[in-house]
Amino acid sequence: MAPKFDSTSISIIKIRTIGGEIGAVSSLAPKTGPLGLSPKKIGEQLSNATKDWEGLRVMCKLTIKNRIAEVEVIPSAAVLLIKALKEPKRDRKKIKNIKHDGKISMQKNNFYCKISEKPFPFN
Image: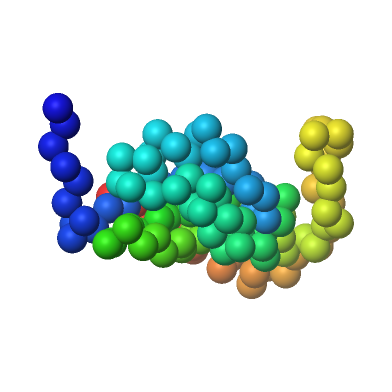
């Protein structure tokens, strides 16, 4: 029999999800089930936290303490550049292989590159 989960410990889960959408419960269940969390609730929290990144794949960090999850969105440099282009939202299941086109100032470009040079916060 497996040992019981210690509710006072802090657990960190990394999930890459599509912004604004509730992910598949079947993919969240193996990660959140052993911690005593409902995958449906976690999916709703992820979709609420990523509303600003709708349609883009962003990395989320779940910090779980006392069976309460806090969601932190950590976008990559590529996602930041796509968002800076201010492209219209698209149906990712129907429209494939798009070319991103637009103008970004050199200052913004350098800022996003500096963000990507920092070590990834998941250690």
